[in-house]
Length: 115
Image (cartoon, rainbow, N blue to C red):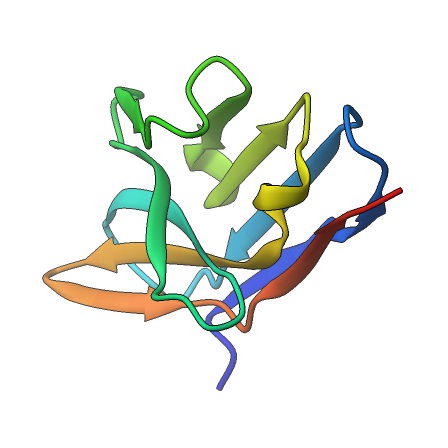
């Protein structure tokens, strides 16, 4: 049963932008923190950005000033605006949502930054 649905990945040139979206099922109640992770080939999954229900955000140092995480609580949706993309941002990006100490994951969306 799919709980989180991601969209917005794709191929972009260096310096370009992409916006990822992740919609959580309405069957997930009381969502707290929402976040984006990424995993590049041969590397461990890493936290990119996280946002509390109240809107407080934090970012990995590698994306500060380039990525912005936002959320719409009414729509159970989290977004990741990615600007000034670099080849090293290439990875599969995963959405995560926490509810009552349970973590839900999306299926992942590929982001490729290449000329």
